[in-house]
Length: 273
Image 1: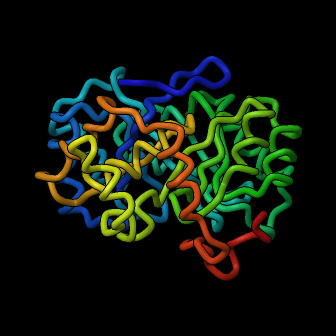
Image 2: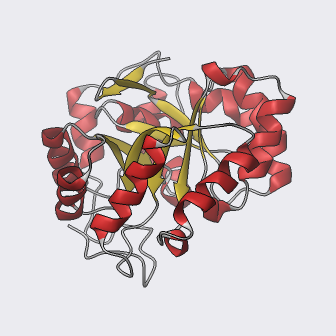
């Protein structure tokens, strides 16, 4: 699979995310994802399905060295007496001794970012993660994280899809050597139903959803796909055999609008760029 490179790491460009999926759904769909060729899996403490992902990967016989596993520390655990313990609990649930990438899930303001980064670095120094990163950070927060972190900040995982213009954040990330990981790429179901994306897809024999994923990949992003239906997995990964033209990329970029953001939880969301 195509990879995105940052700070010497190679991240599989298309990941499989398990946000808002039950244990049963995870355990049903992960074997199909492995069969289709997915090796990058993304979860989080707050999803409460790390254990289901760990069980599914183990039961399917996935080789640990073939996998790229990401999880995220929840904001309630941004304290010295909880941070490392919470990561150890995540590793136990995932049935591994380390993850490939550990992220701070949301910026949070109860604990200074310098302390958050110090704890993240301590986990990396302890060998519990190969790489560290952030999620949902603004340009200023990302730059501060990069400046504070002894370990390279590998990625900023942010909401990205055709209706949300993230070019400024992406440009700032590139300048810092930080990869962008795009989540919510289907915009909560809007992308697969988009008539303009469907029209573009017909030129290639692809669905609107595949066009949406391709749009993210061609910007150099790591794209997280998701489906709870095993019979849809093959469609999600079949996005490397066509290429959108510059005109098509520009047309899709033009779908962005001021109110395009879907994920902005009160009490967690920063003042977005």
